[in-house]
Image (cartoon, rainbow, N blue to C red; front, side):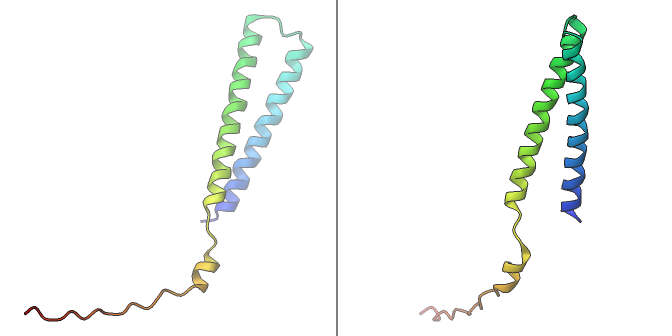
Length: 89
């Protein structure tokens, strides 16, 4: 599975959503931000931005947990030695 492509796609969707929210916020400011419906919508957009931020943090944490395969392949497994036990007396 190409995780990098999945991350890029998700980040791209976040960028598009953030740009849309920014435009709606500009319209909100130009309109003066008056009206209950406009204020509620603005609050919902702010909450969504916070959700996006949390999701990006989760993606960042996932990126830190990824371990490249090359060092693992380069380090061979240690040879196991059989242990001989003395027979019970």
